[in-house]
Amino acid sequence: MSSTDLSALNSRFAIPGHVQFEDGPGGLTIAEIANSHAEATIALQGAHVMNWQPSGQEPVLWLSRFGKFAPGKSIRGGVPICWPWFGPHAEDAKLPGHGFARTVMWEMLETKALPDGATFLCLGLIETDATRTQWPHPSSAQLRVTVSAELKIELVTCNTSSAPFQIGEALHTYFHISDVANMAIRGLEACTYLDKVGGSSTRKTQRGPIVIESEVDRVYLDTEADCLIEDRGLKRRIRIATRGSRSTVVWNPWIEKAEKMGDFGPEGYRGMVCVESANAVDNVVTVLPGTEHILLTVIGVEALT
Ligand code: TA6
Image (tube, rainbow, N blue to C red; front, side, top):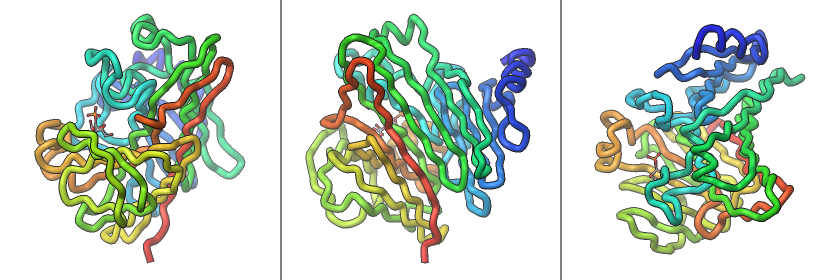
């Protein structure tokens, strides 16, 4: 972004002691948030929350040090937004996996310093001919983020057309963990999931907590449960609470897929796990004309006693 544009952005939306805008990696414009509770970084491209670190904690989100930052390229880590579909497009394999929201520009709509010291930001997806070609439904998408000792993210879809439409979506959150060997995920016990490893899509039932000992790529269906990532190495529990989400996706690429993807770095897969608040597969959402749908996730960190 030119220095003029950057200074215009800062004059409209910067708040001393809360948020300012800077040139980030790969020339991406970023919002740097620092308040009395936490620090965070959000790229305007994709409205992509790249980092969130509550005071006194290690970073909670994982961001690859080997990711390629560039206009139009999805960022490996943080919270990519999958919208308005999840996974491959149902009819057209040429369209981008997980939709276009995470690789197009979003604009700042609002920033606010909240009375409790938290920072609120609202971004709106900028529609273009390219997005309208891929998604010909009159609609709008907003991301509302509250940065505090918890991270609250709302993905808001408005149907401004006269007909219903269906969306698939996910806040595809990459979490920083000490090591996959020290970690278990609770909250999805007894849930039905689609096992997508190896390109299959087999329905299975979760037995006990989730541990990662090989590639894991699962869409848990019909669940609104909080998920807990128990990290014995960092002696902390990350809680992922949701509203307006009926699916949870759990993913770790493990060795071979991480190498193939090329942007995890050596052993990068060991320090991350994705637990994604979503609406996917059976749980795609029908948004009625003139209404809005909100996918909310609230992430918090607790001591693991
Ligand atoms: O959410 C899990 C998943 O659908 C995996 O199948 C894998 O493709 C992952 O998303 C990452 O996808 P990306 O397009 O970001 O490389």
